[in-house]
Image (cartoon, rainbow, N blue to C red; front, side, top):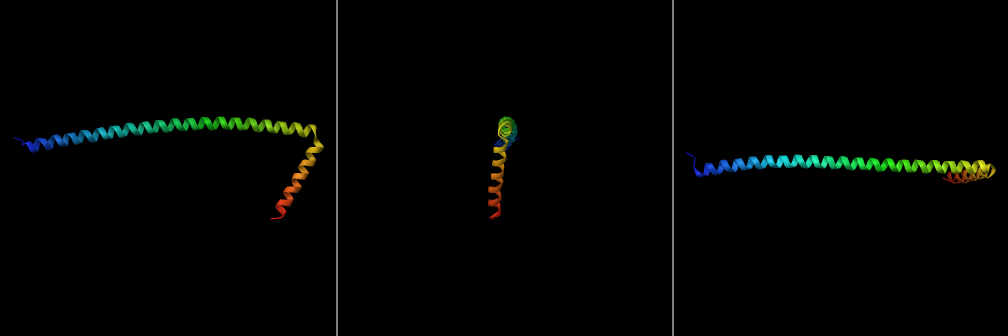
Length: 96
């Protein structure tokens, strides 16, 4: 016949085992939730980056088209500006 101490110890051991399993289950659920949240955040960041890249690409194309239109309309002024920019850059780099 088991004593009250043995019965209490067995109950405590069973409670400890159940608690351990419950903690493991909660930890597993938390890990899955965090992984899912991380994946959603990553997908959201990828989408935002893709949208930003598209916007920057479109703006760069518009700027290039605008510059090309100006150069075609005013070729001599464009040559003069390029020469002046080259001289200024050469002077700045030559002083180093």
